Length: 165
Image 1 (cartoon, helix red, strand yellow):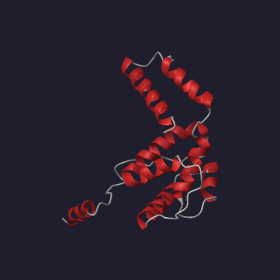
Image 2: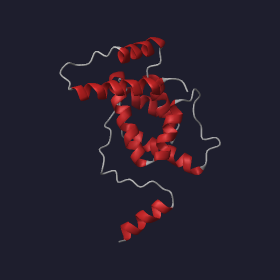
Image 3: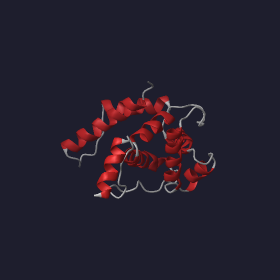
Image 4: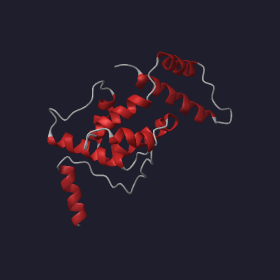
């Protein structure tokens, strides 16, 4: 009964409740561009389970051009940033860990911003190629019709998400 009472307390206090045993951690990221897309997607999903607010802060961090500081942040935001820092410390290797080691301790959002900046495609040519793949998708012939539709819809969502706001 005590766990139930504690869960109600957390829900009433507005804190996120997540049992991290329910979902598998995203795995380690070594900084290679080829692994970024899937790893970042899994990591964002995992973080949403930890805190919806932190997931939103990560999305905003990726849009920032300048390094992030805690200037003007409230205690809750700084604590969430420190939580992301702790999570990333166990998920990064290689070049990605080098980025992590070069940010100020407790600044997980700045690490996420830098990783996103370095790995998300941004060139005009990339956007053109993405659009061409939507207009004339060359999907694997071994896929079912529903799988092809799902992949095409993902291409459209990704293209829309990459557009400037």
